[in-house]
Length: 280
Image (cartoon, rainbow, N blue to C red; front, side, top):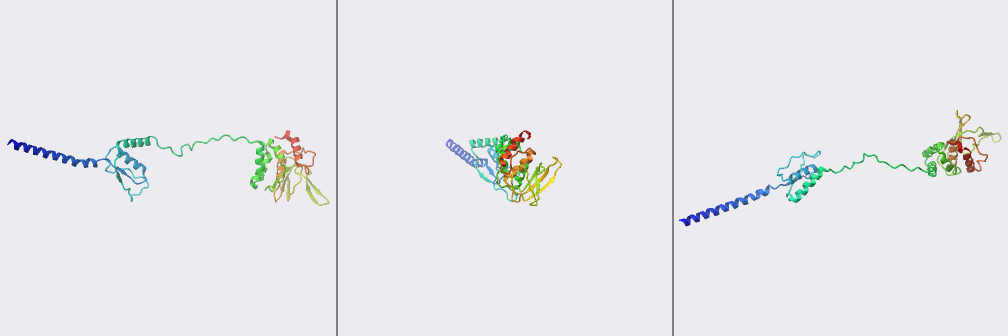
C-alpha cells in the first residue's frame, strides 16, 4: 500500500514538472515578441525618423507606430512603408542616445552665419604720380565714353601729376576723342588771311594738328575768353588731347618765347616752370 502511494506521488510530481516546463517554453516567444522594434520611415522626414529611433532606443514598446505629425508637403495617397529591424544592443543604444542628445544640444551651424558681418577691407595703397599718369593715358586711349570722361578729368588734374603728363604732349597715339572743348584766353588766336581768303587759328600750346571743324563763342568769365570746340572725325592724337586738357588746367597767358609748333615738349616744360607757383 505504501509502495502504491509512493509511486502515485512520484507520478504526480513528474506531471507537475512537465507542465511547468511546457508553460515556461510557451512564454519565451511572447517575451521575444515584446522586444522593441524600430519603425523606419522611407520618406524624407528627418524629424519623424529621429523621434521613432529615440523611442526604440529608450526601450519603449513601439509595436504601434508613434503618432508624429506628417511633414509638410507629403502626400497622403502614398504612405511610407514601415520596415522592422532588430533592436540595437545596449552599448550601441547608449552611443546612439548620446548622439541624439548631442544633436539636440548643438544644432549644426547655419551656412549663412557670419554673412551679416561687414567685411573690412584694408585701405587701398595710395598710387604714385607715375601710376596715376599710366592709368590716365590708358583711359584716354580707351573706349570713347571713358576717354571723354578722362579728358574732363585733365581740367582739374593734381598739380603733382602734371610733369609726368607733360612728357607725353608730343605722343601721336590715336584716340577715339573726336571733340575737344577748349577755353582760349588769347585775343589774337584767329586770323584771316587776305590772300588765301581763309581763317587761321594759332592757339599757343596746341602746336600743329589737324581739324575738320571748329566752333567758337564768347564766355562771360574770364573776360575776353572764348570757348572753342575742335572736331576731328578720325579722332585726335593723344598729345593734342593732353595739350587741350592742360591748357584748361593752367588758364594762364604766361607763355614762353618758344615756337610750340617746332618744340612742343620743350615749350610745355617751360610753360609749367613759369606757372608752377600759381597752380593750386
